[in-house]
Image (cartoon, rainbow, N blue to C red):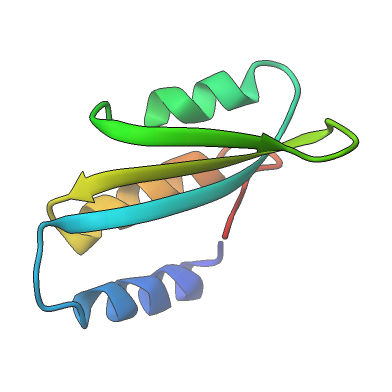
Length: 90
């Protein structure tokens, strides 16, 4: 995501009045070189994580539901995960 996208995400999250709250992360991850495991290691420990493979098995959708304390925590995780080559946030 471009920095502008993070500003928009931060603004949208800031409109939510109650934090902490349950947040759902969703990433599309190339199914290669241990990237799925790397993404999972970057997500909050206390979370519900699910996976769905594409038909071609070339990508994995990683969905994580976790209680987040503050919008900035969401931004940090999203920035770190999408810094991995080929990983996209939805």
